[in-house]
Image (cartoon, rainbow, N blue to C red):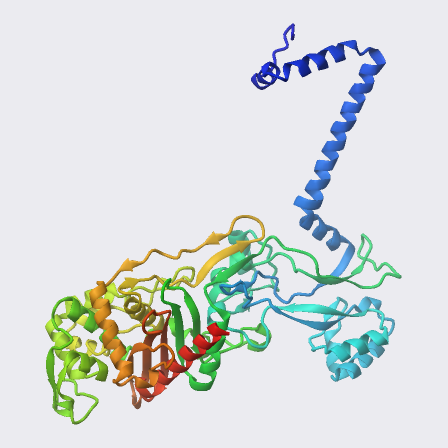
Length: 601
């Protein structure tokens, strides 16, 4: 029983009064009452000792585990003169299967600590001889600080350096953000050096990260969009020498290498890119496209599996040097740039005409070829009597001009919007709206005829054309394209992006009719070079005239494969090509077959 002014808390009362525990409480109280003088003091002392032991253990756990990374960094910074073994301390950009697109390349490098060299000139000469470089070039790399020499180190060279036993010289693994061959360069983006104190202050305030004037930050692509997430405060590894509290060298201690540190300030970006499919696309483009773009989309989800642009570049700042991204076409992501789509836009015209009952697949037309006006057919002698299915397969311009007039601008604009040609939205990949894209211009005087064949004011990106084609492949559903799946944090929850819920853009009946029309293009129409032997394919060619270039066109092919159960939607743009049928269709086929083969293996 408790007496006096001591009132137990409700929790204690509940504990005391609960069945089975009251006897233990009585036992403890009676036992305490029996203790006399010295024994009571001994129990109190032991209790206090246990309390302080538990408090010390909790503090040690907090310092070594919870804040271990921070205190390790602080200790090392105060006791060593360090050089980073990572060129750009940033989180990785990964593909959908967590295969690194950045940060996966590592190679040995020679690290020199001038403070430990007994004869710097002699050591520089010896290293120059081993590495096959000019001694003068090597000497200019040495300073009063530790330095990583920018020369590759083979296995035999490493053995030679280690045999020399040069004090102050070590060979260490060095992590590079970009390797010799970077996939999806225009998606990854590139870095640029901080331009001054004002930019550095802005970055520090907006991100809460540590920045220095010598740091590099994202300038384009994911490197730019996710700068605050990717930026790391510390390198994962370093080489250093031990110093005293005033920075003086501690004699007799060798250089040390540590590559086991973490950095909880970084996050990794997981994209929807499939590095295997991206590799297929890049290799085909290297052979076939000097200017243009390719997009590969997962038909069922809208995930972008590959996105590539040409001309290409390596985003490594050491390779880029001081080249300006604003005056060089290589830095432009053509996959999200606007071009006249040419006859691939006839998919929109056909969707509107079929949905609105303007035509049926068997509706008859007559093509006079070169005699037709205002826009002549590509076939000088004309197609003669032709039904709508045949006109689509043969990409007959006069037929689509006639259909466009029957539809009217308002209905054509409405279906272009419904099929995603006014949206530049990509999940996880913010894009600035391009004001040149204005579908309302279709309604302008004299514009409807040109617009009906994808010329005049009609502009679209290869990604938008992919989304348009994917609506047909998916049975009429609009899938918002997605390029980033999630952000992985070292500490804390991952942040996910979508995928967004599909939206019905076309009826299943209209989508089915369009699918048959597009299968006719590859089966017996102008796009037969895009036919995929294994599984079949469907699609649409396009040849958009280039202003000021009489003989060159922007050649398009956009389609999907396999035919029965579409899995991949692919768009190919070959700038300054011959025609969609001759230039883009064969590239589509090669990529589709390569992707199918990559999936099998």
